[in-house]
Image (cartoon, rainbow, N blue to C red; front, side, top):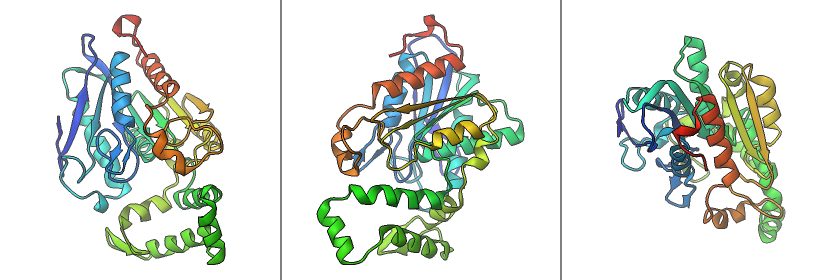
Length: 312
């Protein structure tokens, strides 16, 4: 289906086999040029597609969409900031609510990584406007840390996991990865254009400027609808301790899950966590516990009975 607006976005509406109108979920993917299935040309995360199929088996409809300039959606993802990404999610929610197959009184938002931040931001906007079209929010691998602080935290986590020759080279060159990240932050903050060349790469500067200044707690503290937050114990991109921050910040009902051995890809990883294992992880399906937890929570929040379909 097409999501109207500028630019129009292409998406997939997945419906359960049970009679409608059904409760429904808008699925938001992570950062970068990800398509409606949460896939990048170099990495097949496939989170949104697998969530959509699991939700349908549990009696819930879903809408997932290609970002601007990705898949068959026109535009350029590099020129969109965080604000525009929230706007796009809002357009997807409105388009889903207008479908006759969907119950507009039982609409949920579910996002992974940056998608989780977008969901929290949109739900917070709704709280300010007294919108009643969001029944709950699912936050997968969600940060509760300010953007610039999060990127520095990531640098600290990732450095020890780099191959020994790379770490040795960094020491030889006297390169402090965390200091390098901080220096790049200063360069990005000095930009004023949508895109900019930083460190030899063309970056989506507008998104980065907004992300560096983004404190998710500002949105979290406005969420009065039920919230499910799930993070992996081996996530190198989001602090597992942020689950406690989410629980303490959200004023509405909150359910949190820390999944052992789970990484940011929503797959399990044995041994010490490492980004190098992502390629092998992505050959596996999204973790079954993650899918079951999300589907079960959505069914409870939307009061889906046993006759509406069987969860995983």
